[in-house]
Length: 360
Picture 1 (tube, rainbow, N blue to C red):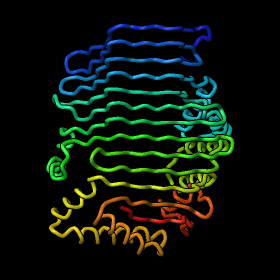
Picture 2 (picture 1 turned 90 degrees about the horizontal axis):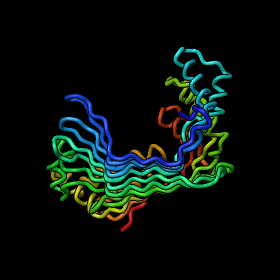
Picture 3 (picture 1 turned 90 degrees about the vertical axis):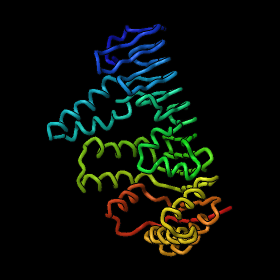
Picture 4 (picture 1 turned 120 degrees about the horizontal axis):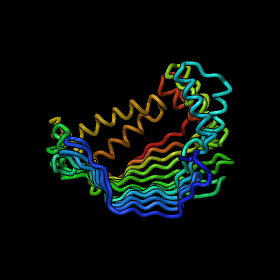
């Protein structure tokens, strides 16, 4: 559609009930209403679908509302550049000029969405809900040089029928006092494309369980760096050379600091008790075993932190409050160095300024 005639314009259109129904045993789709506004080959002001359902036989997916707003379509030139590369990649021979042209156009080859939201989602099988979602919203704002993003997750429910599909899942949840799992989440990001600074924060909360918080700051995330990262992705390949090329490109972006914190309400306390019962050992022994495992893992990165890690994990499990892992490297650490560590290509582990602490 974006490559269509430039004179195509649509101010607003709203359609009542509609849908598609297949034959016996095939899926059917229906909706209560569909509205589209400000549609052109360049942009889409917004589209909203209400009362949608999709399914057949014993499976059914329903939603109250699905909407997108402030959509900028990809440019035909950018899509053509990426399509030309994909043709060469399928043929097994990529020339440098085509690869460079695709990398130059990578940001304009996919749509930009200002806001996406979905409300009242439920997925059912055999007449029982497996998963329900109250609301998911993703927003992007800002000028060309800066971008702010926000993600909100409200009332995500893993229902008893889905838990029952996990071996011993229902019994384990019942022992810990949960019939179903209910989650909320929130995340925010700020990205200055000129300087490459990128600041991120997110929280994820389990009702009557606990809260996980993550924050981290990146530097060097400029358009030029993203273009260099895109080149090995566009070229493809999964061999060692491709991975090392990706690591080199990622090194232009550095991690300046990060904090991961978990605040327990009831989840860890209940989980440790259940684990101790399953293994037939006291809670103190479970805490000691997991503390030793943490010491071994952290010691591979920084041997001087093995003891503090053991003490922090053990203290947290014996009296669950909070536990925090921090990274404050004396100088930014290239993201490619983390990839090297994962694939075993790192000769040395960079100084991360790691700390791990337990609190009340």
